[in-house]
Length: 266
Ligand code: MF3
Ligand code: CO
Image (cartoon, rainbow, N blue to C red; front, side, top):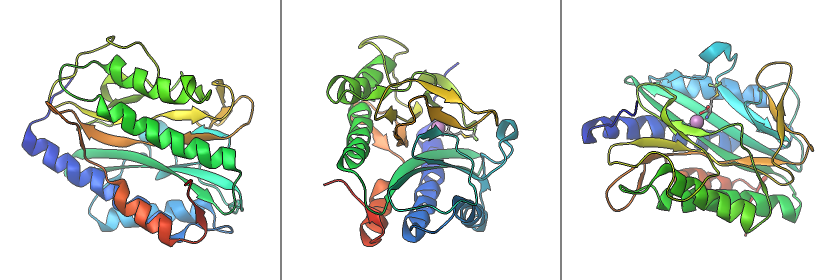
């Protein structure tokens, strides 16, 4: 069942999404070779609680951390750990919060230190694909139109692997609401989009093949070929003529640019 939100409810959700963006901005400021994802996760938990919100991933189906930090061939749901990040690593940082009862859930992939061009290109194209999907998130279109736009840009145009096993989702008073939001599909298929739907759209795109597996910890998802994978996620309000992005990459990108330890594809 899809739960449509009123404009007032969406404004509350915007606050939740923006708190995630602000938290990701704090992460963008401190990322560098030598830092551990465990220390980043700690900072995330403190920042979220300082802002009167709850880190929603913690204890979700037993998940043991505030955030997911997915390095290199980890696609999503990576456990923060005490290994130091090193030059050439990429890390997807995925954060969820509950603020005033409403969920925010979004993610950004950072490139730590010098990178191969092919990895920077994967990051750039995955982010572009998210915006191409968001362009289709308007009333009257269908879920499949968003999915198709993401798949076209990543798989068809660039030959990347689009993960099938994990999908985006509706967002609201719960982290995972209907409908499911795959990153692959047919134009004109799936649920019809109506104003008031809030979607977490989250392409997970592999440099190599699409295949993934889950580790014995029950969470960590890795590429089968161990090539890198990139993940971006925005919280998006479906509207009549143009989608409204509730989360905000501009503040994250400003911090990313100012941090000389982070690389950005040009
Ligand atoms: N963005 C992910 C999702 O929508 C985050 C969930 S991680 C979990 O599924 F730990 F909370 F499961
Ligand atoms: Co999500």
